[in-house]
Amino acid sequence: MNTMAMEAPSGRRRRKHSEEFKSSVIRACRQPGVSMASVALANGLNATMLRKWVVQAEQGAGAPRSSSTAMAQTDGKPAFVEVALPAAVGPAAASDIRIEVQRGALRVAVSWPAGTAAQCAAWLGELLR
Image (cartoon, rainbow, N blue to C red; front, side, top):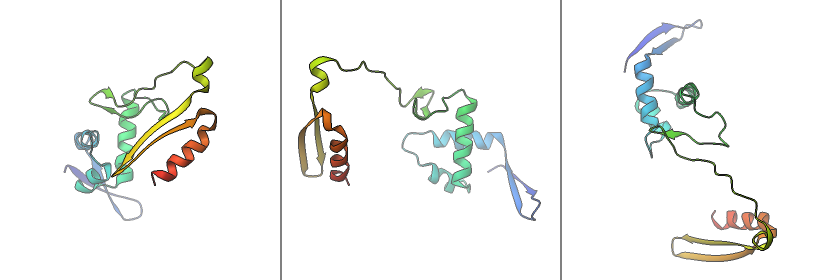
């Protein structure tokens, strides 16, 4: 770990991390299936500070700032891309919601009226608890 100690106004010591070190832990965080908290713990960092570094790196690289339009990128490839779908017209608008859920040995197939989608979402949330 490449760090330098600096004296903070309150007498605490602060570490200043090199850009190379920051880049390496940010790259580690971007690996699929890796927990940001585990990377922080392994490198003696605060997880909140590491998250801030990752967000700043994404914003500096021109990554979208809104989580509603895109998710984090992995190896320069977006992990999630928003796709606009045309609005349903005619009979498709009145069709049913079809859901098939498997949880352990339990397997449920449901056909729910599209007009009551909110109730379907609530029921599904309770089922998956």
